[in-house]
Image (tube, rainbow, N blue to C red; front, side, top):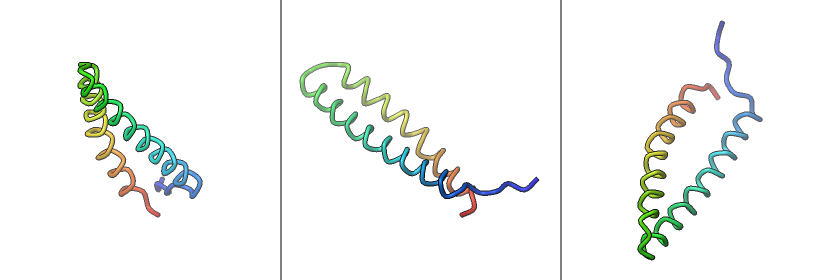
Length: 70
């Protein structure tokens, strides 16, 4: 059975989710930097977590977007 592409609503939903995730990641990095500057080691843990999450999520979503016909 042929694989059909995403509907416009699904594509818009993914874009809005990624926008929200990007904004949350931005504020997470800001919080991490503030915690590191205050001497809290939790800032490094948060920064490492966000980096690992980004290293996995970004290539995954790029691959998914390229595979789907528009």
